[in-house]
Image 1 (cartoon, helix red, strand yellow):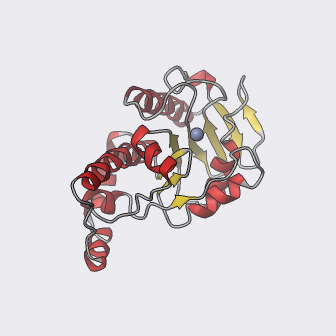
Image 2: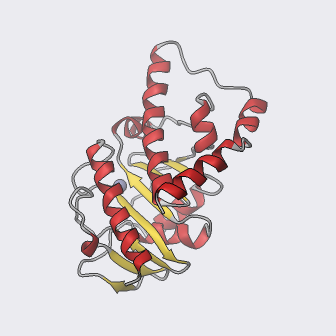
Amino acid sequence: MSGEEAKIREELCRIGRKLYERHLTSGAGGSISARTTKNEVLIKPSGFSLADMAPEHVVKLNLKGEVLEGKYPPSSDAPWHLMIYEKRPEVNAIVHAHPPICGGFACAGISLDIPTFTEVIIQIGHIPLMDYATPTTMDYAKIVAESLKGANALLMKNHGAITLGVNLEQAFQRMELLEDFARMILIAKILGGPIPLPPEETYKLRSLESEKWRMKIVEELYK
Ligand SMILES: [Zn+2]
């Protein structure tokens, strides 16, 4: 195993524990994965809690879904993780969780795609709301990948959320931010309703250079 792969295995476990400790998921819910090469991916094993996953539990797959290494079956979410990597070459990490406030919006069928909070516009951008589909169906992976077209985060009706990143840290930070944002929107709704920024300001925020600098720092810290 390469030193790089060993590092990514450790990173998957570190991020898994953070997701669990911050109540972004519970039980054996949620799944995370990261690319090791263009065509190979490391993913959480099925049935494991993200809190208890150790580097040796992680499953290695190719993009066709064939298990290359691992004692346990891969997460049942693997088909859509692989489909996203297939369609989005710039994505190197995927986090899927069941955060309670995002989940509330997802179960109520209420979109979070409201350009109100500057940090979310800069770091995440568009947040589509995916229609409900039965998670185990063959078409599910296609629906997830299609819904994420041009987006870095997805709210899944009656289910949870997905965030993407160039690395695991970015995908995790986006999930953490998405849950905080859901809490803010909930409070804004109690206080009279969120007030979206005008489209020209949203566009300006999306093209800020600061995000590129921030990502450089994240890459430096976690390489
Ligand atoms: Zn799930």
